[in-house]
Each structure stands twice: as structure tokens, then as C-alpha cells.
Length: 313
Ligand SMILES: [Zn+2]
Image (cartoon, rainbow, N blue to C red; front, side, top):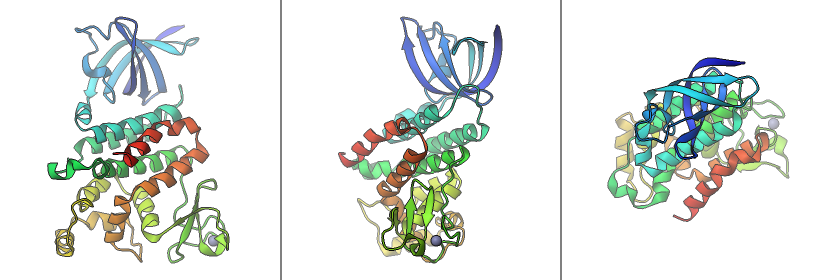
């Protein structure tokens, strides 16, 4: 039976369909993944306008049918466009990676309001991310590190909402706080940290130094806006920054949010956290390894070429 449905949605994928239409995959707040045929959407004077652009948030109306998986889009009203994400390739890439992950883990008729809000929050933070000064834009490696911190954080939180929150504070085996027991080991299969005592002589997980563990905790437990603030205050590795400038930045309170995010951890200063974010490739690998154990390998497809991009700028 055909029925009319209203939903709030983020547009995750758009494909051309025949001469005048589009196939659109939405992440809806109320019904999870919804695929719609938008007839006439490729025409210049389409009634859908920018509401079907990638990452756009819209209020949509569609006709659903219990025996079908592709529905007919009737109307779409733009709420927020996120169109400026396309102006900077590294931001667009980060948004695409988050959208791709969501696209592969959500299901039809399975709403996930927390994940929906998380995605909107991270798209919004990404859009307001301060662009780097032009002098720093020479190396793609430098540019990629900032949105990569947000992507990493998004993946950790999204996995948590889907029931796979990595244990980063207590040893998975003895349950003792990991606080002073370093180095810890990250076991992606078990989904968390193992202390040096339990790891024994032949630890199975990846060795995590203090700064990397602090950074993973920071990315998992800190709001996106605060991560963006910390990242925007990181000195540029390509250009360098002297100790006095770092001290000045600290005194201006730019690192205050970072301290809160670390929740009173001992043993590594903000300098270590900054350098860990600057060397994000290895924590990103850890997170991807963790996700690879708990989700379909297809989930990680969009990250392979990203990693290639980082290695071959
Ligand atoms: Zn232990």
C-alpha cells in the first residue's frame, strides 16, 4: 500500500538516473536509510533545487510502498546546504568519508537519532573549520591532518553509538585503570586497551605511546567544536614554531579546551597531544583497524584512497 511520509534527512549520495532524474540516498532522522527516485531533478528548473545536493539537510516528503525499497520523492525543502564544504578539497574529502561510513552502516527502517545528530554536528564543525593561512597550504599532508582529526573522532563516536565503543580507560582483562601503566596495547579485535602486565612478553595489539592514547581519548570524549579549536591552534609542522610562540599560545588560553578534553590525565602535556594529532596517520590506522574488526570491510573502502593521497601528495 502506498503512503505519504515526511522526514528530516541528510543527503548522503546522489546519482544521475536517465536523462532527467536522480537517485538519492538519504539518512533520515525518523526512518534510517531511505532511497528515493527524484523525477525531473536533473532539469534546470527542478523544484528540488539545492535540497538534493550532497550533504544537504532537508525536509522531504516521499511516497513509500511496503513491497519496494526505492521510493518516489515528492518534495524536498532545503534546511541547510553545507555547500561551502566543496570549496576546500580536504574538507570535502572528510565530509565524504563520514557520509560514506554512515551510508554503509545504516539500514532502512532502522533510525539512529544519535548518529544523525552526530553527523550534522560534525558537518557543521567541518564547515566552520578555520581555513589554514595560504602560506601553509603548500603541502597537502599539512592540510589533511586537520580534518583527519575530526574524521577520526567522528568514526570513534559513531562506532560507539552503534554499540562498539572502544575501551580506552581500563585494561580489558584486569579492569585496572590504564592511567599510569604505559605503554598500553590496543587490541582492535577485543576492542580496547590492554595493560603492559596483562599483555605479557608477546603483546598481540599495537603498542600505544602515552601521547597516542591520550589523543584517542581526546578524540572520543571531546565535542567536535573543541577538537576544531585545538586543531586550529596546532603549530604547522612544515613551518615550525618556536617554544616562545607555543608558550604565548598557551597563555592566551587556546589550549584550555584541550586540557578539559584530556580530563585530568597525567603524564603528557598538550605539546604531546599536539604532536600526536600532527602524526595522525598511525592513530587513524588504529581506528580503521578497530572498525575493520567490527564492521563490514566495505565500510573502509573510502579510506584506502585517502591513505594513498597522504602518502603520495
Ligand atoms: Zn591488565
